[in-house]
Image (cartoon, rainbow over all chains, first blue to last red; front, top):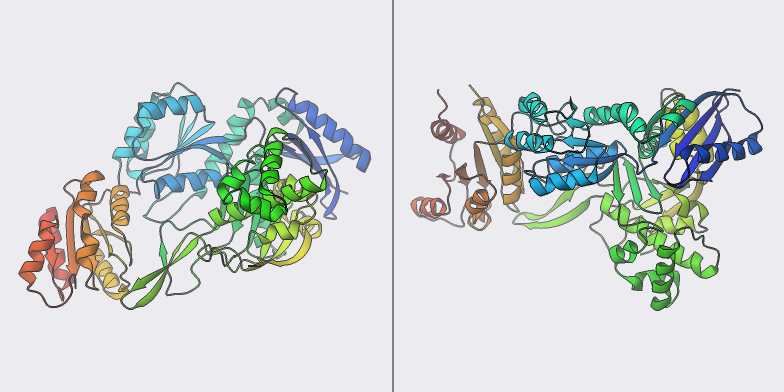
Length: 466
Length: 138
């Protein structure tokens, strides 16, 4: 046996997972509640004690960890044009597992600087201009950032013609130069920036978040939790040498405060005649919906999904009742669906959260009438032919009708322009192991892949009913 | 010499892709750094691209007769977006029917286009104009 311990320091739970990598066997999982007040280390010891009860005493050969504790990796992303470099900077940060707490475009002003100071980001990603293009904006913004009193490193990933000059203007801010996130118009190049963000997370952020003591207990806090989930999904989709993956997929992580969607798929137009508009999106794309979550942001769900009428309809209860129960969940963030009523409202909210978040993640198709007939214009990713949907997150693991919830992520004739999957096999992360498998993927990809193939439970094929 | 940067594309709901490809190759070969937005380009897309690229000129193509509607207000939007004074060209079958080119040219110039090219203009004509206006030595 070659046991590996995988730890996820979360903001509310510390989760531990034990795997025997030689036989690709999941040995056990446990979780312990942690709060801001209690020490993260306490949560870890409680979780480990619980794990030991399940597995008996194990000698671990490796201990790997990821963390979203202390607010996760909080980043500010700055670009020039909102739909071009500012969007590229945001996509790069999200893909690196960060929480984007500010996204700025054009020239920063004094108010923006004050705001960034108040936000106290862990890292700032500064971009702007394609290579050889606009340099005025990134130089201005570097100068403005140098006036921030908050201490943060700046990753400069803009126009290469003036990158060094920008670094100089940043003054006493530590800066790192990497390749442009958009070297040519409408071409994304997010990996170099993401690599640097991950390095900074390892070197600086873990220490800054007071996790140093925890880091000593393990062989390293390797990445932010969302980056681990992303790594797991890339492995599951693409496989590793000698082992094939399951192909293009979408994953939905339904959390208490946010709903995260991952897609590992090209999403290119399916027909030659379709015209692609705007910035092409990354193969591995992550979006975070901060206004949609099952508890802390539960009030955002009806607001985003078209009002309480839809919640009531799905929950099979009067609108007034739906409103009352949703408010109850917002006030009781630790509430579990213990009654039939709460189960039904949780179902309705989860279905609408997934529907809204996946719709925002996927691209859209617009029919344009031209003199030579109709033409199709696509923006964002076309995921209609993706056939696997991985569901994770507390709300999903406890829910009974996961396949019905997941069906809402799929294509609907009510929103024909939204390029969501037409039908998909629903895979449920019932043991909550995705982040752990992403960590394991870095050292033992074959084992991580096999554990996921075994532990993700298929709930059959789903299709939106209308 | 710094390579001059030009943004090109076919405006509006126009899907004529062939001429656009020809222009891209011709302009590139003539030594320009060409940012090609392809077909069905909106005014905003030209402008956003020109900002990120710090472009020296925008060359708008229109082949389906609706150029006049599609191009209206573009100069004002450029001014508003910080691209004051950027070189703006338009060319192709830019109006409906057979109209005297002088009238058409006058109308587009009034809209703020620096140069207007009629149907059948060879790429060389536009290249010469670009070189002249941007001060590129032969």
